[in-house]
Image 1 (cartoon, rainbow, N blue to C red):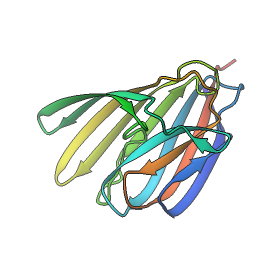
Image 2 (image 1 turned 90 degrees about the horizontal axis):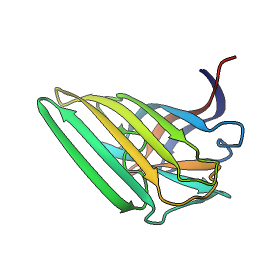
Image 3 (image 1 turned 180 degrees about the vertical axis):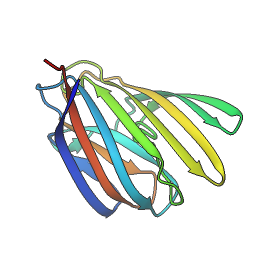
Length: 166
């Protein structure tokens, strides 16, 4: 599988990062990586799908989440949300952590699905998190927004289309 960069956005002190034109008919599957230099708060980095430079902020997002911290494992299921909560992980002021998000079929007029893996190392605790996500509408999306729950973020978000190797 070859990764082909479709977009890269660098930002500073942003309360929302809009990435338009990163999804197209050229790819069905995408990988989103982030390099955050920190945030004002320890906050969830939420995702909303976009088309025509407008976020879908309706109650169309679902997720199933598993969080492992120390020796505790917890699960969450949520439906009818206005974004994918932690769709790009969390923004941690003390530790940046790792995050990778895969998004399937955002441009096709079918339900979009995604998953995120992220890790963290804060307050002497190491942890990991996996979230699987779905979007209930069959709209063709061309981009997304990354929105911290509060505060601002600084860094880079890169989007890659996945291409079958020859």
